[in-house]
Length: 373
Image (tube, rainbow, N blue to C red; front, top):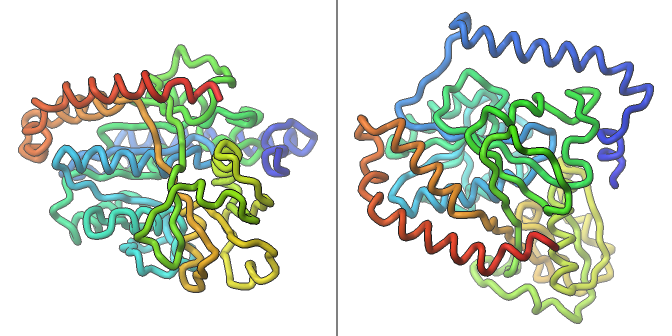
């Protein structure tokens, strides 16, 4: 367990001293939410549906691959989603579009990954206030008819039509159960009761009482192909790196699934973890005595400016039950049945049932056993 996990996982005299601040933080969040509910503070209602995907803890929890899956799913239904996420590192406030050519030293890796993955088909915007960023995105890309917001659970100003909470099932899932700053929670665990869906990332060997939660769906993160940063359009099976002297490096947020994937594939390598906000520079790779360096794609994209033949990126893919797809689509249909905003979605309704049923059979027959590992 990392030092930061150890801090969140325990209750020490320091946590007891910080506990009153956690109570004040929780009180502030409840008062702010009440003010929006009573219309003391104005909310922003967009002309298109808004889907919020977020975690209740300081950890990402697998949110990014879930968003990639969600965008792919909506696009296959003829929709044109846009992504609203956190601000860049140097200018966190003003709304700004992210492209594959954005400076990786100033833009967060997650935003850069999404922009590169969905180049020219799904705009990605960053900024401080999700409502302002979403409005700027729609003004610049009026063809978008669905907004996916990655920071919405704690931002009631932006009205939403569907909420997905990501829960990481691991040894330190919810830590000591306290709110910030004494614990890792950004909102109470009870928040999982009133979202529309909870996506669980992790192994089923960790058991939590989910009976009062919203409907839950398991997600498994996998990486089966890699590409060299100098040739990003060419994919290879990850097994081509077997029998090479490897050095694996990942930011803390991506380290667990990444290192697990390497071990499951049978790759032997030195493992190294860096802080989540670490900015990679060429000097980081000078003294590595290895034939190849492998990194999660999100981290590797920060190294494009000095990419060498020995740096490889491992993209992550989310496997999720087709039942979540059905829930999202049906909820959007219900809320926008009298609107022409989602004509494309309704036009696809005849094919949804068959496609979802087919995916469910594949999911349970082929992949369900993987959760026991």
